[in-house]
Image 1: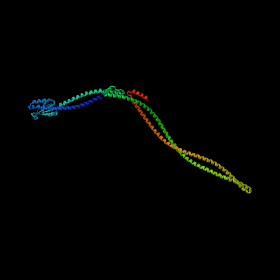
Image 2: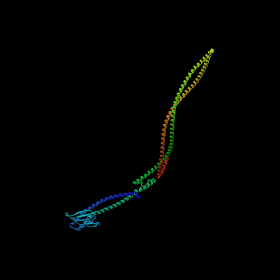
Image 3: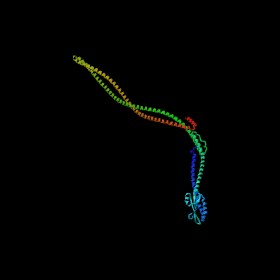
Length: 498
């Protein structure tokens, strides 16, 4: 046993100190009471002795009986507390006296040493007048010492201390063995059993379990603690096994989520790049559409201008046709004139022939006029023929122009429709471009969220690893305790539940 750390010795030491303090306090109190009582006794004794001496000395002093005086003094000074007895006459002159020297031997009193005697060993001084028939004949003075009183009190204190020490030691021995038997031994055995429990042997402590004292309550509570600890350890083991399985499943799920998230992140980056490229293409298409719309607007304006020119050409062709008709009318008139001229020339030739020589010159003129008329007639026919051909060409040109006008009109309508459609397409493309920008922002947000998700998944992996390591450490800790059978059955239960 390690006495330094022994509870019993500490309790005994505390009791010893406590008893000693109480004993010392009681001793001091007893000393004061006893000293006061003995002092009072000594004072009363001094008063009684002085009175007795006064009475006994009165006759001897009156008769001047020295032997009687000497005898009375020697009898009374035998008391150990009497230090000196001094007898004086009525004039306070020394008559007789005895005192005890340093060896406490009775000697003749020396008046010169009275003061020294009082200072060194004197305690109480009592004087009593000696009277005979009311007349003072002398005085007796006592000097009482407290030496023997102090000696008695000191011996009393020593006896009290010795008795107290013996009683204290006896009490402490009884307390020591009582505590050892009823408290320390059960606690020591319980402590040794707790070491076995600490090593993993969760077995209850049977000894003293039925004891109805506080030790029995402590042991029963200790056993209940072991049972609860065993139950808790079993449950913890079950929870750890379940947790290990969950961690394993979560680890697989997190790995799958991580792979899926990584693939999704790559896909989102590709989609983001495609959307950016698509947005660029849409912007290019929008610009081209705007350019095409502008070109179509210009084409429509030019088509309108061409349509106006064709209208003017058709009007000119119609005027040309009208002029051709007028020319044909004029040619018909010329043709009629040439026929009449030809007839006149023929008549003139006939008349010239009738005139003979006189008519030769006129005949020549008539012939020339006839030739001119025939030539004019031929020319008029040719012009008429050409005008007819020109009318045909003009008619064809008119038809072509009308067809072209119709075509240009259709083109113009188509161009206007195309321009409107292109404007609508451009507006739709602009809206699509705005939507595409929002989509790109959303995709960027999704990409950012996916990156954060990947970071979170990495943290989850780290946390799962920490939980896994903690579970392994907890299993290693639980392996210390003898709950393997329960653990195996719990593991089977977990597997069956899974």
